[in-house]
Image 1 (cartoon, rainbow, N blue to C red):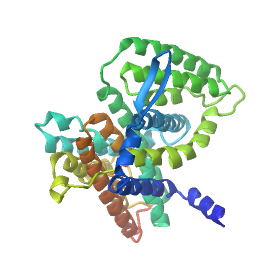
Image 2 (image 1 turned 180 degrees about the vertical axis):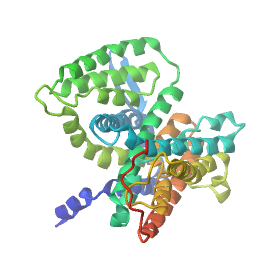
Image 3 (image 1 turned 30 degrees about the vertical axis):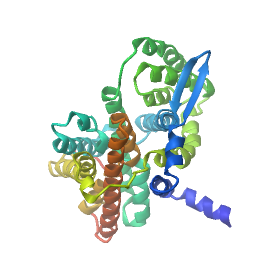
Length: 397
């Protein structure tokens, strides 16, 4: 009975989002209880992997953020390659509307954050935090809406979120690289060449590629470039088809997804979502840093996603997703404001000061919560409105 109930839960599209929410609640409870010192000590505990004195020594929180999240980005890379070669991103015409929505959904939140933090060089480094969208959480809320939302809306949100993640990867590569060490970066070319050759040969076994990817992860980490990018690069060199016509990429993507969704991402959320509430007041939420994040997620995403979508449709460059109305699009724009995993991740890259990170968590959690509740309410109401009978997202050109 219990096993069947668990199986039904994990088969539901909302399972990943629910686990994320439970992990965040657990982090909040622990961080504000008698267990708080043990929580902090555990995350700060040093773990070392060395050989003859050389290697890595990092606190547990960085092993999670640099190591486990590299696997998360590896899965994103696999999904991106899949979608680019044979999925939702293959036809450029199908990408234009959600693509422009993603651009607006990244630019406007960043501008709002910058406007509220202008003149403070310390907090300005966090400008990219509200630009991100959490795929699992957003799709989880959409799944809770059920048949009240047309199927095409999930495709629109998924494409928007994938492109949003691609933008976040580019931002991390360009703006969150510190103390670049070219010698390690040059050494990372060796495993990269090996990955290229394996992909070119259509190698069936993925173990050699994963080993080379791990070596590249270590060298990229030591170079100063954020190591999660090694996960994305490795993914793009996993063959879509091997020499026998089978797909190592699909097999790896399907096998890895449950572990990332139900284990790695919840662990990350538990390690990073622990806002310390002691001493906080309502005024703290309106400090420039948390307010910039929350306003960027709630207001910026709505304006950017809905505004660009509205402009593209009204100017005749695209049409609404099949069966969707403007209330559906507005609901999706609200859901895009659920930053959570990616926002917390970029926040960790932006700030090392624990006090500033506590403000980041406050802004991310409050902005994501408001966006989730608003998006759910709008989509539930929109389900009672008949959408226009239009074809799936296509351009008129």
